[in-house]
Length: 566
Image (cartoon, rainbow, N blue to C red; front, side):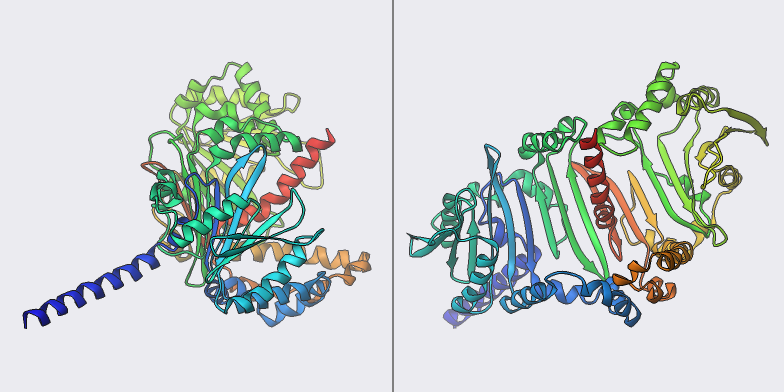
């Protein structure tokens, strides 16, 4: 009986260990991969399960929008013009057949401007079936200028294809396939996979910087990105100089310990978590979102963030298209006697910005606001700014109900604008037209707004953690509806005057706005500072970071093009 009881206890312990191991492996989807990579890995991209991610993608709002018959009909002509579409479809079918798991690509080191890459994945079919598909990919993407070289290593066959410096070494290890542009790195990965390298302090999983970043990531994700900017800062500077980009971001990069981002699916929406490990740069304040009371039922964009007056001198270091102009404004204000201390004394540090688009308007209106702490000092700053923004433009000043308005007269143009600044003892409000600024000033006296009370906003705001540093809200359905009403007539007119457009797209088949808008929920982003860095969480049909990448890449291209032209 004692022996039977001991067996029962051992069985229970074993079962518990199995359950714990399964749960542990599910809660740390990176564990398999990070045990294969060296400590100090510069960058890592990890996709835990391709087919599962594909299935979840098919349940998203964006994919359902894509599947709408009206959208499919509109996209039929432009998609038919996409080159090699059949090749892409075949590759996706091959990937689904492989059912790859733990797909990863990593930069393990950068030596003499040469990054060392290693990648791999686990596959479902047997090795011979997988080899047929993988061999086709290698033949497609790696030119074979000579006969492949075969190297035997620890019961593994390593095949080296391509010519220096574009050689790729590949190998199988059970259900794993690995590839690298560095033979020594590939051998090291095989050693870790087979258990020959058992020193845990040498693998990425034991790296303190990596572990600290992963502590902020969700338990499961569809895609992960990890980066150590310091390790690549010198190389990034060389690349920036090569493309002619201005600015000195090295000092900023060196402040960042790590960057880690994960994307997952959440009820048909996309959710991102981004961690930037660095010391806090904002003042010791908690975001209040007091500017929310300026919102209306037609507000499609609301932003609130803490700014740091001490960093105004660095406004042009980001390489933004407007950075040089803003730098000129602040420099001119400085020459007029406005100091950082004036900014800190005159205004609170919380910046708010809102964009409204009433149904009756062709274009949106945008205002920005700062709370006023010292009216006299604020008046000094504004007076300097009105001369710094455009020294040749005439400004007029009026006072209404205790609020001082500054209006800049601009020449008549297609888009008539009247930059306006309103200053009261409560707030500074700036906008590109006088009507929106005066309307926002009147709303500023209220304790709540139509935006703050709307169910759409409340639901979106509650879907992310409470922000302490920054908050962004975008009503994508409202924005799309207004854009459609403004741009559809222009597109139809363009098609009438330029018939060649019809060779690529049928403008008359644009989906009705209500078909598109029903799949669009707000994008909301919340940023907070934790003990070792900034954590930003975003959710929506696409996340804020995904939207920023989609819009930012063309801007970066234009910026680099302009720098080359000069």
